[in-house]
Image 1 (cartoon, rainbow, N blue to C red):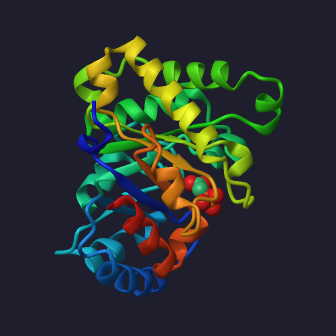
Image 2: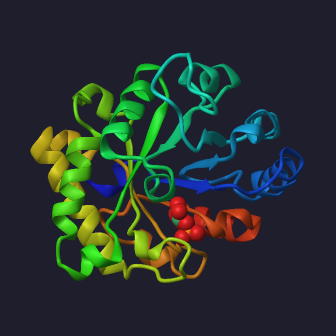
Length: 255
Ligand code: PGA
């Protein structure tokens, strides 16, 4: 499939930044700058910011996402948030399996898979993050790591459900470090992910999936990264907190 036929998606991942008031201010700065974007624009924000973010983006082309969700509908899971709670406030996307969740909060491919299944069942669109550690890259097992994550994280996800899944390739060594993967490195792994999806599903299904790159993507390198045939968008951390930088990346994806 022609890259131009896939949906380009630029998503901000705010992480643990911005209070509800600050979220409103930032989104009020972002929305006019991206109003004529020719790509999907999403801000994934902390749970307590969701209501303010949805209000601030009402009637605009900016969609709101959460940064995680639990797989159970309700119950004794102190500190967790269910898919139903997210749906009710108007959330459309949810980041799952981010490397910071895997690294600091014990997230595994099994729990990422459970969350992904639950999100899809509730009608949310998961942005499933995969990526290798620096040491894994140095040991030359990047493809093994990615293949395993893709297979396990999407275990039991149907071809129909895959249409609502976004994959984010985020090499862990590039996140928040200022060390971006080169455009060729990003392309190599994004193409590998698409090939894995073709193996698990079929070529048409794989060709339709939006695959983002994430890891120190900014207004200076977005053009080159997004020019690659299998890089359909970006998951943006640091640069998503500065309206002008985020808008410049959205502009790069709109070409
Ligand atoms: P970064 O974060 O752009 O700050 O590297 C990306 C991410 O973690 O999604």
